[in-house]
Every structure is written in C-alpha cells, then in structure tokens.
Length: 347
Image (cartoon, rainbow, N blue to C red; front, side, top):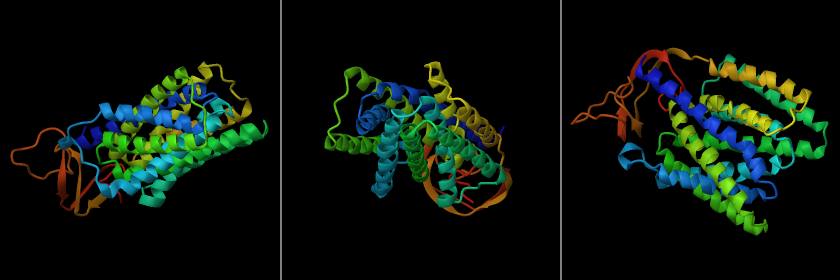
C-alpha cells in the first residue's frame, strides 16, 4: 500500500471517528438541553470544545500556525458553525423527535458537498451526485412526513435543517484552514463562538441552567464538538471537504441509533421511507473511487507533512523524520493514482 493510500485511509478513519463522536452526543444534547436556552446551550457546547483544544495542542514545529490573515474566515466559521448552528439545533431538538432530528442531520453532507463544489470546484461525479440526490430525497421525505404531525414538529425539523446548512457553510469555510494546526483552529473558532453565544444568551435573558445540565452539555461539547471538530479537520486535510462530509454522514445514523436506545419512537412511515435512500446514498459515497492521470502545477504552501509520499520530495539538511511543518514548494509533476480533493488535488 502506498503512503498516499495510507493517508487516504487514515482520512476515512478520522472522518468516521469524528462522525461517531458527534452522533453519540446529539440525543444527549436534547436531554441535557431541556429547559435551557438555545444560545446558552451553544455556549456550553463550545466552552467544552475550548477545553479539548487547550489540552490537545502540539509543538509549533509540527503544525502550520494560524495568522491574522485567517481572522475573517475564523469569525465567519464561528458565527455560522459555533453560534447559529448549535443554537438552531438546540431549538429544533426541543420541538421535534430526536430520531427524526438525528436523521435530518444528513443534510449537512449534502450542503457541504454542494458548497465544496461551488466554492472550490471539488470533483462531484455522477456517482456522488446521485448519492447526494438520494440523501436529499430521504431528507425531504422526513420533512414531509413530519408536516403531518403539526406545525411545531415541522418547525423543529426545519430548524435542524437550518443548522445543517450553517454547519455545511462552516465546513466549506474550514477547508482552507485544514492544513493548519487543528487544535488552534478549534480553539479560535470555539472561543469566538462561545463568546458570541454567551453575549446573545445574556442579551435575550436566557435562564441559567442547572449544574447537572451544564456539566452534561460541557461534556457533550468536549466530545461532539471539540474532539469531533479536531478529527474532522485532520480528515479534511487528507480527503477534502466534500469527501469528509460524505463520511461524516454516518453521524445521523449513530445519533438515530442512540435516540432509539433512549426509547424515541421510530416515527412510522416517514422514518422508514427516509432511511432507505439515505443509507443507499451513504454507501455510494463510502465506496467511491477517483483516479486518473493528473498534473500538479508549482505550489508553495505550509502544512504538516511527511516525506514518504510522492508529493513531498524536497530535501532537508539534516534529513527530516516524522511529521513536521514549514513552507515548501512543489515542483510540477504528472502521475496517475487514486486521490481525493485534498490540498494537493484541487483540480
């Protein structure tokens, strides 16, 4: 197995672990968040994420640093992904079935892949497009089914879908930062998001939650938002925004399974009708393979890398060992191998 194939597989594994970390916490956020304001919930979740970022930092020489030029993008990520999205999710979870809300999270993969194509021209072939269509169909069936159960249920589900759009935008924006130190990206985004959410919670006079709820939401934030985001960014640098989102699409099924274990009703035909196209779409994503002859143009950038792959053949004196980060230049090269839309394959 080539080093690039190992990197791709590790990207898949990281994305799946990120999905599992996030999926497990969604029904728990619904339980701990009962009676807690949406912005207070968002603040506690991302304060938990800050705690994880603080204890997972690596040596500066191992990762590319954040710079002031990244500030506008980080602010946009924080407002979309660490303020609007968790608040919309928290509001929606209190008004709709936890199992339906969990499955509706599939829209995040659809929005992320679509935005990855629009913003970065990431490759979306017929197979991926068909898979996205199936996942969208499943989501629409879920929404239509919930519309029969009253306006409150429908409004809650629409809020969850709005949260997935905000996270899709966040994912697309974070793609440009995937080569930087993930712990510092998480720390910056989570800190800004928590600050914004705390400010809004005070402005709206949301009540102070009970200690047990606060601790529960902090733990959910540390696991499902801090650890999950760090794993997500590490996966994104290996396989790109759209593919990471595709793999992350198992999160809704993990969340739905946990919700079912908690006794959530299955929801009748809407859930069954939505589940089939969503699962087929997920399988199509997971089994995609993209390979063709391609040419790399000269490129200068900085990110964590190793010298056991065909894209990093520059010299060091003394020779470098293990993963390290510094600015380096890629010379033109043409070759043929299976690849993903990572930092070196954005054609």
